Length: 283
Image 1 (spheres, rainbow, N blue to C red):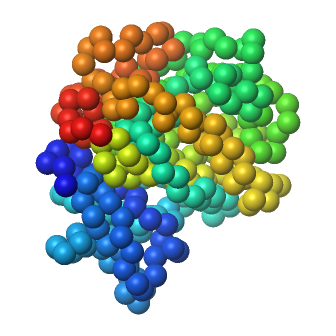
Image 2: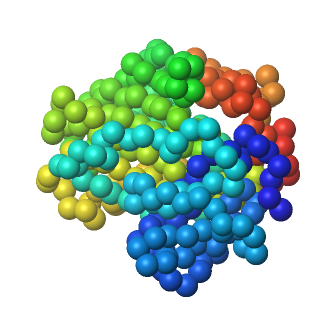
């Protein structure tokens, strides 16, 4: 059953990879509502199954749609318009978890040495240095800046470890981004976005897409690097309890390293979102 959560409904969601949509209608579920997608000549169409047509926009290799009336456009990724960047869509993965939990895991640097050992982190470099988290009211986004962390393999092209500078951005509740200094072009930032399709409160699909400055690695090497990281996160996010995101104060005790998570949860609570949270419908 489609959610009644207006905050969740009034947003844009990636629901398919554009090249995968053909002339035969294909079904998927968004926020509890079954929808259909199909290609009509050069255009892609969408509708609620047995119901009205839905808006469609194609961006970043994905088909976006909405069940409501968004007040903001799809997130702007400036790096996508730079012609020398490598575009790497990493494929859809289904996860038994709240999509909000997936975003929070993406923001969490503290798990890098333990879950992504010898890739995104390694012992004894387990401390998360202080960084700045804020809700940027002018754009209605959550940002974490001045982040530094030791990573054993900072990119597919690198084999040695180093401290890297990271910036995290949450432009909407079910989209999260990472900007990191590019090893081969230190004056530029790689951009990685994670688009999440919430199916039910405790079930979602997610796809990372990357815009990289890398003229050395093959497409397969770039894809494999990100897929290994995402596969390592699967066990963590699917075994978190409660399954849904708690927004009540004191439900989970944060540490100093959880500054971005605290800002993200405060932002969600201010918005009044309930889909995917312990305040809303059952998983």
